[in-house]
Image (cartoon, rainbow over all chains, first blue to last red; front, side):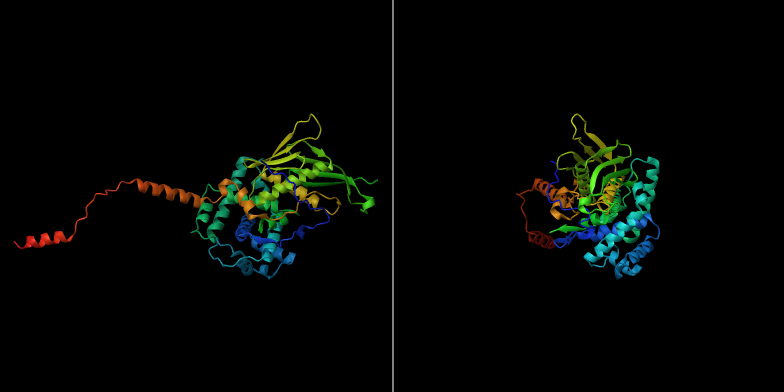
Length: 192
Length: 203
């Protein structure tokens, strides 16, 4: 039976701001580092030299020292256990907040491209070509950076398996806009 | 009385809100405090319009659905008074709108992922717009419990490796049990052979 929305309706426009949700009773989801790293990988697939744009954006937003240069940024991303070089560290909630803000902002810029890939109303041939281009580039980035001995990575490199890539694009499309960062952030945590 | 109208457009969706400032609440001239009407145009679908209650229901369902979808959960959401339903339909999403007027058939709109994202963005723009001083009955985007996520994940994404390995183990064990064993086999002492060999060498 489908659930009905009945419990605590607390949002009121102009009263509660986007960042006002209390995360004190929440823990970081175990797959948060993996998901955030893959989302950045998709951004890199859609935009050439995306790392420079991300660092520039981080500077403009005024984010912490973790995003001051490529090395620091790479260190943050190495918390993804599926990478070739995994740093055995976990992301702090501040780092997650910063990454969420960056991803949301970048996804906003790339929204037209993301939308094109997700749309089923456009020409099928064109859509197929776009997907081929997108998946080829994404797979080459995965091959370059991820641990190929992991079964999960091998399955991503399988030509028939585009489900996870589509999932990532959906996440990016729903992370855009004023409420997107909030939505993405909520998906990176679990309630205790 | 000042009538105001604001439009939020996102590719396939265009939401227009009309209303007026609530002077008794101290709203400025460009703020909508009382919503008089709204229209939503989704490309390829009829024009939707209604009162605040209907918009509340629509926002409630779309935003809750998107919140779940971003966590990988695809499940049906129904608004409080059952007038708006959003359910997964293959890779698409089925939006079902029931009219509060009698004799009007429910309207069904199929949205793909891009259209759902457009609609969500439109509604986000509205709820975070400072030019509106209206309370929306929407839940905050809060994290889910891990158990809730696991129980609602699509079957294909569930990790069933342990389950499969147990099945393979029990089948293999059962197969081994079926192999007949000769319980009457007599084990002969190997020393007997050596003795015979030694005796043979005497000649």
